[in-house]
Image 1 (cartoon, rainbow, N blue to C red):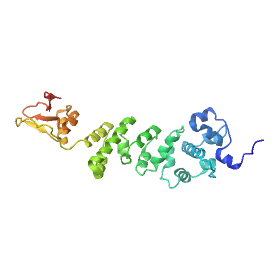
Image 2: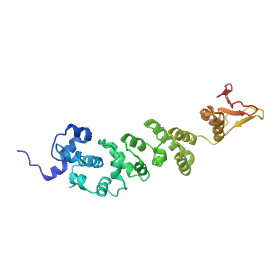
Image 3: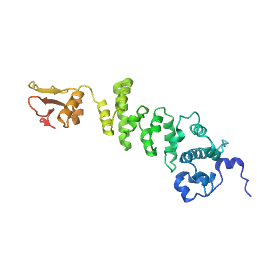
Image 4: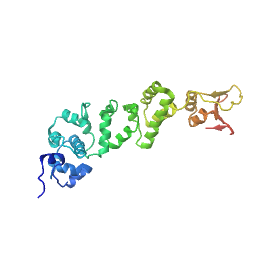
Length: 286
């Protein structure tokens, strides 16, 4: 005969039980653990609100990740505890308001363990939690995007315009770090305030690119002597204004201008578009 099952053993791991197909669909990687605490037909678990099912997945993962008995009756806590009490348990201390409501916007199917970790870390962030509270639906892949950007960028106006591609988000994060080195902490704060006003992902990335460009363009070679009706373009602001005025590709040459490899002039004698002069090259027109 084997050793009798102790109360601690039941509390720690639950009784073995097979997961039904429905539970496997809803609980995914957590199905076996859920089945130990809510045996077939798993009615007590499946009839819970989605928010409490997500809470159960987190608590069960913690139980499986320890070798000691914390004495918590997971079934009782998940099924009967008040939202505020359950939130404190999940956050292991004081919990920002709205945690259980946020769980309710995470869908019916349970998430992967790492995605729950992302969610809880963001909910503990004073700025990121504002974003989560305003998201009509909270998706695991979207949280992965938010986690990838520096904390300073985790504000509603910027997060709303983050693209889906992780590589693009990594580029934005790198641009912010470079801009912070260029402009300093106070300058970076002003940049964030400006980026928050972007109305699209394209506008956000344009602002990030501008933050890495110098205010005035350098000169590696002396510009040619030209008549007065050739108006030089020597600053980033003037370049943007010129590009808007003539509706052409001037902004694409910002890097060449910044490094002094090109000079741009607007021909004001007529309605001609600006002329770009590059070292060792013929004049170009956009």
